[in-house]
Image (spheres, rainbow, N blue to C red):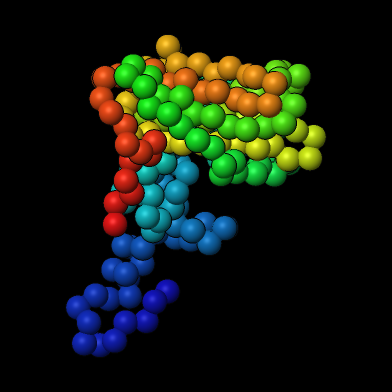
Length: 175
């Protein structure tokens, strides 16, 4: 029973009638219709727990899909090629890179072209060498551009998009 002060309007008997008797586990006996929660619980008053997943059920993990595989050789260092020359023609620009004995190593040289630049790579056992120019003076036609190996020289031919004079190979860098 609950003791009530004399100033209270409720009597001891009225309090006993409003509070349900305690169950053996210490919770009230008034349960929601699923009989999962006591009348004093948050879930009882807010109708939570009716259609919930059983405890322990989890959503399946997302299935990952491989979109692209990129292989790169990061183990070997790459030296920049800084010594080269270029010649401006009417329809194309030629870049000359001197490299002793390169004519016999054709399988070690690759050159890829983009609209505004090119990437020349020479693969060697110790370290690869690279001439990468991503900012040519003007745009080129990548599908028509090419590279050719001579005995001691690599000649890169970039076909111009427009027939203009190139006074420099690269665009002037912004300040």
